[in-house]
Image (cartoon, rainbow, N blue to C red; front, side, top):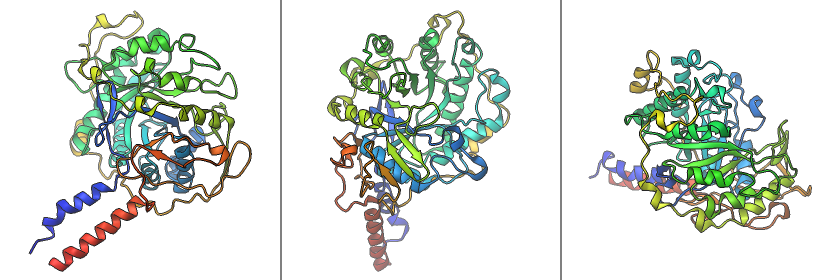
Length: 468
């Protein structure tokens, strides 16, 4: 008679089936799906409703704590055709299970900043802010999100270097925080999760920053796994040449890590036409891994794709234009891995790699503060650890209006099948036509992958009981 213990591998199998997307690893210049071996070219949007004011740690509220809001926005983003969101300000002590599970079911990955407006390395004076308390905070972010399969990656920093002056003191701290995060993940996570840096487009020190974060420093853990660039050089009807995309393509063609736009979408010309999308995902730019449009909701800086008013959202003309550009993409091109780039090796860190005499080229990293080694070894005590939960509701109750002010009726989240990642599907949301979602795998006919998995698990338990 089999014991309950002998059924553990079978139960683990059913548990694993409850993943819509599969974790991603880095192979050379590419993010690669660990199950399908397809390249993940990021087709994404930055997601931070309310801006910094949407982060309320006093009440444990952030952009991923309200399941009703996440269901609405995931359904809209799914129709748009995105496969990734970036979220900037998150509270590691809050519960993110509903929102993470909703975006997971939608086939959408999450790239997450570990810092917040109140807890980050200070770019004007980094040393005093590099503390045990700070590292405890960012390690708690790993704990909060490491168990979600759609956690694609973590940003260790964002625009710590935002001009030539800040390129002197900050580079060693960028690598030190990356090192600490990678060591914590290696010790406390069941899977590798890439860690990288998001750079402001400061052309005077851009190449040096990219070189600095990717080079091999005696085989330590401080090299970035990827490089994000916040770039707004393509405005209106620009071209690859006038926007400087040709320079970027030439610079990054020999990158040993994935490079993508962590923000893009100049708004000097309105409405935005997003003609740069065709260029970014073209053969000329395949060395890069796509990008994230800034941003989902309209805030004071006027980069939004949608207007948010209480429980109602209205799609903007920018949304329609972006969707049109996404629908025209060649999916076979953007999902193909770059096999020739996997053999590239990072150069050894050396002063000779750095071109600017105003960029810190010492490669002398600060040692981790007291007590951090114990945190890495034993984990953050009493940290909140997220987990996938059943997505019980897929119908969107909130009012969503197209850019022509017509209300979108019967808007719902489409729960994608296992192995599936959301991709542009030819939808024209403002016209209310097309499928609500397409994917790199087939949708389940029953519309609820998680419910189906739970039913199968229940059946296993029933069989086991008859054998006891």
